[in-house]
Amino acid sequence: MKIYVVSGLGADFKVLEKIQFPKRHEVVFIEWLIPHLNEDFAGYVERMAEKIDDSEPFYLVGYSFGGLMVQEINKLKPAKKVVILGSIKSDKEKSRLIRTGQITKIPKLLPVTFFNEKTTNMYSVVRKFFDPRNPKVLQYFRVRDPYYLKWSVEKISDWKFDENPEVVQIMGDKDIVFPIKNSKPDYIIKGGTHLFPITKFKEVANILEGVLE
Image 1 (cartoon, helix red, strand yellow):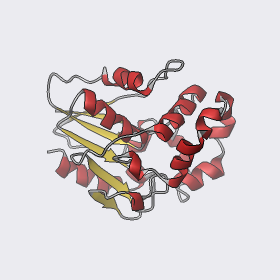
Image 2 (image 1 turned 90 degrees about the horizontal axis):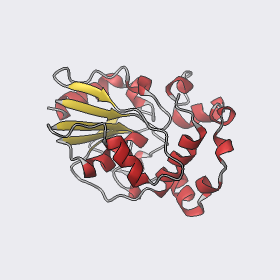
Image 3 (image 1 turned 45 degrees about the vertical axis):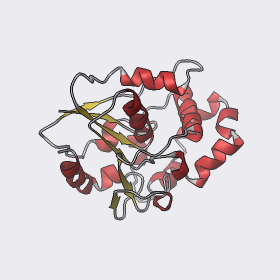
Image 4 (image 1 turned 90 degrees about the vertical axis):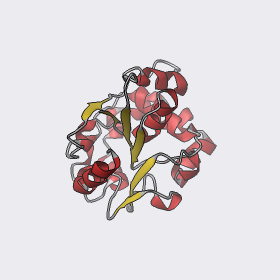
C-alpha cells in the first residue's frame, strides 16, 4: 500500500528523511505546488490531490502545514488512515499567534516582498521558534518562494476545519508552533519540539509501525 506524505510549510522532505516508514508500504512524497495568483485553498487542494491514485487503498501522512493539507485531501480522496505529525485536527487547536493572524488579517496585509530570502533567513528568530537546540534548523526549510510563503501563512490563519476523530495525531510536548495544550493527541513525543520528526525519528517510526498496519 502507498503512503502519501506531505511535508511542512516551506520544508522539503529532509525534515522527514530519518523516519523509517514501514517497509511493507511504498512511500510517495508529494511536493508543494506554487499557488496560482489569487488561487483559493479549495482549488489548491484539488491540484495537490491529483497526485494521489485512489483506485486502491492508501494512507496519508502530513507534517505541520502538511497535516492540514492531508486532512483536506482526505475529504476529496478518502484514505484508509490519516496521520498528522506536529499538526492540528481543527481550527479550535490553533495557537494564540495563529489566532491573532486570523483576527487581525495581518498575513493578508503583509506585502509579498516581506517574505523574501533575507526575512526567511532571520536565523535567530527561526531557530528559537522551531527548535532552539537545533543549529541546522534552516536546512529543513528550503521552499522559499515569496508568494507561496505569503499565501500559505494566510491559509493557515484562515483555516477552519471540524475535527475528524479518525485522524491519528502525533505531537511533541515542547512544540510552540502548535502547542500541545490546545490538543488531545493520540501520541505524545516527550521532549519533542516542532522538529521532532528529525530529532525524535525513532519514536515516530515506532508509532507509525503500529498505526500503519
